[in-house]
Amino acid sequence: MRRFSTALLLVLAPSAAVAEGTMPQMDFADPLTSTQILWMVVILVVLYLLLSRWGLPEIGKVLENRAEVIARDLAAARAAKQAAETAVAQMNATMAQARSTAQAEVAKAVADAKAKAEADAKVLNARLEAKLSAAEAQIAEAEKAALAAIRPVAAEAASSILLKLTGSPPAQTALAPCLDEALAARKVA
Amino acid sequence: MAGPKIDALGQFTLTTGLGPLGRAVDFTNSNEMMLAGAVIIVLLFALGLRRRALVPRRLQALVELMYEFVHNMCVDTIGEEGLRFFPLVFTIFSFILLGNLLGLFPYFFTFTSHIAVTLSLALFVFVFSTGVGFYTHGLKFFKFFVPAGVPGWLLPLLVPIEIISYLSRPVSLSVRLFANMTAGHVMWEVFAGFMLLLTASFGILGAFASIVPLGLNIGLAALELLVAGLQAYVFAILTCLYLHDAVHMH
Image 1 (tube, chains in turn purple, red):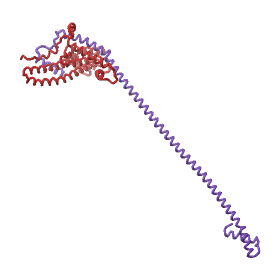
Image 2 (cartoon, each protein chain N blue to C red):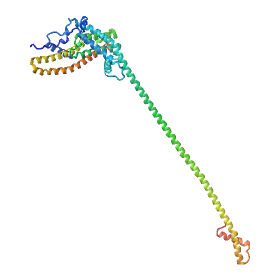
Image 3 (tube, each protein chain N blue to C red):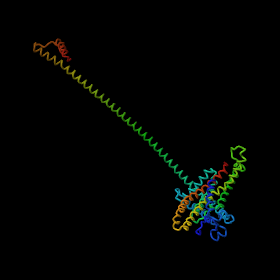
Image 4 (cartoon, rainbow over the protein chains, first blue to last red):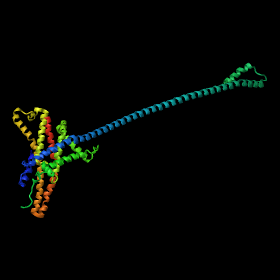
């Protein structure tokens, strides 16, 4: 209301001060004052029909279409993002699985190799041991043979020495215990 | 003094437009501007709708902006039911806006400065919203004049006040627009006439001095541009408000 009164003051002050005549707006005796309303009604009705039947619905359709397209694009982008995320997750899972498989394989190979090496070493050891024991046996046998060969030689040598000393071959029965004793003293037999 | 006289009100004089044909059917110069405004609105829509682009260019964006502006005004003020009245509010808003804006051009008639025009529009809004009220609520719409939560003994005082304030709506609605537009144009004319008076009375000195009313008029032009848009908006939002009252009764 205050705006109205200030506005009215703004209208009335200059018009009262300046114009002698009345305001043409208030001249209701003029037939044009009312006929302009008639034509305004005609213009407004046509404008209303044009806007409500054609203009506004068409603009509404354009806006609706835009909202639809944006929503569709957003949904597509969201779906693509989800697909990408799924793919990444799948890839990560595959990678993890491959890694664990590879690790298991490596571990198995290492274990296998270790086991094989151990077995090989065992076989080799066994063979070496066998060879060693065979060699030892051979040595022992050779030693034995060698030692066995000493007695007749010693007996013969003793006999010949005694023959030369005494002039007669010694009795075998007397010689044998002496020989044994001597040999035992030398720890040969 | 015999110099030029300031005729601030002559600009509002109605004549007939469109030549002899207009004279025959009493088509006035104000109707010429109404027609121009309506044609500009329809042309705007036709040009704005030519491409229907996903990403609008200037004209399409302008029409869409107006559409959404009034659309939101209707929905925000009246509610979802307001969409029924959207074409009506848009028609009134665009018609008044174009009338106000076209009136800013020199030598153009401002049809919104005629109380007969604004009062007709306001009376239509008043009768229409009252009709919507009775159509929506039947005779219960009379309860609108009985404020809720008021002691009974106050009612004989308050109900007449409510009725008077309701009946004064078309008056304030029409006079607000009429007075704003008339005042601006009268001031323009007065300042412009004052320049002529200064020059006529004081010669060269007066011509130099008339730079003051010229500056005032330039400032006034900016103010009038604001008023033209604002008053169209005020008329439209009050129309929405009255329709809201009719639909919701509070």
